[in-house]
Image 1 (tube, rainbow, N blue to C red):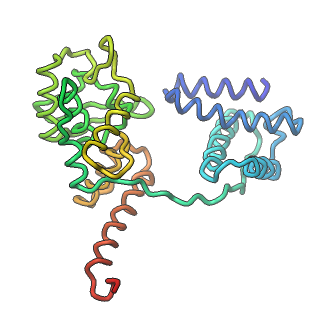
Image 2: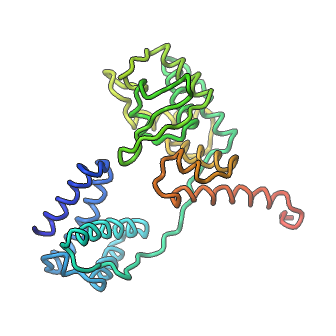
Image 3: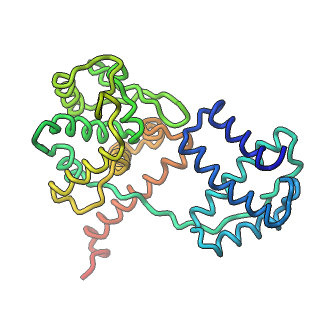
Length: 294
């Protein structure tokens, strides 16, 4: 097979066997298309022709073309995943990325809402026929730390309101059970009483009874935040960050927060420990006699 065919075959396996999302497969395809273009320019007809020196040249050329450090790290990760699979199948003898590192990425901490801001947002009374839906949507985001795609995919049969739980289909088609808080339960009961609770029907519906459009939720949240005068960029994932930060701040249990968020790697969850430390540092700076600014 040509390198192009090998990439197509591997991406097909990712989607079919590992249930990678279309978004994930699309990201890999964009990254690997850069590698294939580099190989064509270098007249390299197989992945075996790659070595660490050539891969360093590839990374350097992408960096000169303006690719940001974070994007370069993702590019290397995509290449590394492909090479690892080819190596397992005996289609690649060595590791072309051995010793190759991308530029350091300055870790950007996610923005979060404080408790008062979060309460103000989820308790917004937007008025009109969308008010009940808006309240249920915001309460569930903050109560259970769901991703936007997870909330959109929910059906009434996924909810156990009496038990205070929801079954969520997360990344990689992995299912997890997440608690639902009492305020979210009340808001969901109100939505069910108004819109109906047919088992296989989406909880949050758009036109024609289909699941609500992601863009609709994003725009609605932005409008509600402006209504409440919250001076931050409000988006669905912000409530997930806020949920995680507040849970960790209160419990200190990193493993539990990892399970609630559905993170495969605890390193992904550890970013919230940095947020927690930032909060403690601010308290220290404001309270300690030898730290206060004059």
